[in-house]
Image 1 (tube, rainbow, N blue to C red):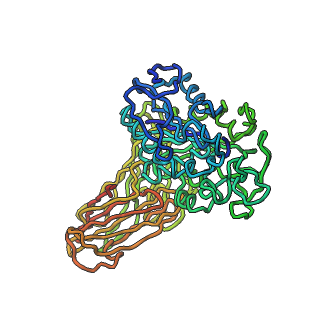
Image 2 (cartoon, rainbow, N blue to C red; image 1 turned 90 degrees about the horizontal axis):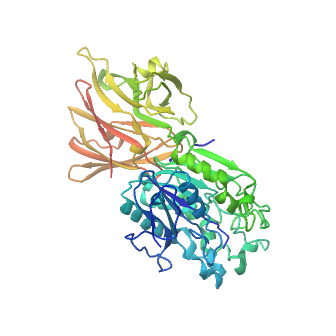
Image 3 (cartoon, rainbow, N blue to C red; image 1 turned 30 degrees about the vertical axis):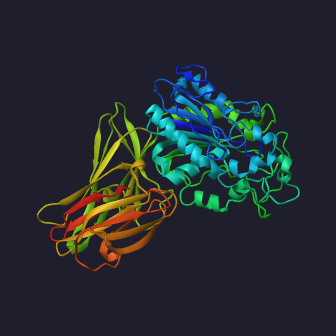
Length: 553
């Protein structure tokens, strides 16, 4: 199983067609509150639909966003709008209506009455609607004063939110993400086969050339290739995937309620099984993400009897989402550098670790060594116990706990909150130890673009730069070294395996820079996912080092 302060719930059926006041347990409305800005739908030129309420915020905000061919509540032209009932479930279970919001980013769907092909057209595409989602989330954060959002997305809404997060590096704004039956790896409705009746204008015009099919007609479309590059669950956001495991007319080539199957082909006419499209890859070991597989969800679609629409209206989906968004989180902390290894100039570095339990109850935690230069996916750790309000010190952790030498990083996990830090020191000096402190960091502290300042390369000091990949997929890191005046000195790349660690000793030598430099900086960037990075400026005589963490920019 794969195991995330506003919540965005996005619903979508790919092939289907007054201000309120806050009160816990109240009735969810169908309008925005007074004073909320008017947001114009960028592709339609009309004000967006939605709901929300004024009032205090105790829980994380919940923002419901419908998906393709849907609305945030039933309208004259759309009988679905199930996210409204979803929101009411949250209101009935402790949320205030001021914590429940929704966006309608495709109007009231009445334009479909005169042109059904708009279901697959540009105005319903993901790219066309990202600006609406961006503007809405920013407006809700500004109106409420919240700092983050949770996302609960159905079908196309899953990838709409993921694309917004990718474009804006918005994982810092998204605490948790519930992804319900989303087209993360394409849809089955875009085949050029004559048996694919979704191509007919009356059925939405889902031809291979339509805007929706250009995005989702294959797992390898330009849109999905870019969206799924690197980690599909990037940054600090935690994910819950809820999917149909038996049928879904968007992904399975089999009957779904009243909807007949179409060929299991991509938009090029090549055979392809889309039944696993709703899964998200690369989240298991990183964030404890969960996956909930459901069956028999067609019973919750009272109109068409489909599992794809029924799963959004399902009590199991509602309860799992509520539990995921309100239950305590599993804590993961990375110590992005640890050693038991010889260094330059007769030095020998080893690492001590401290772990502290601040709670009034005993906890257990797992500490895992992630050695450099290899794929550490699935690597087993050591489980330790820690009493209430207690701290444990693990001297020379690589030797005493793992009986190994070398260098790498550490990953610590627990179902409870805890703190961790470390000290890496040169133990080979007769004058005592010389050390650097490397604090334990949550994934939220990782950066995809960072700058390390204050580097030197001269007779007195050498500068190392280390990077740690906390992602369950490979990442390629680009280093760019500069003088203080911005003159470029050198550039290079390094690919890290999942949960890998790498140190450039020294960064100047790694990039082929031989000049003496007293005041330089390096940028560390990866398009594949966030990472931890730090510089270590080491005294050539004593082996004493100063750690300089990468600052995100």
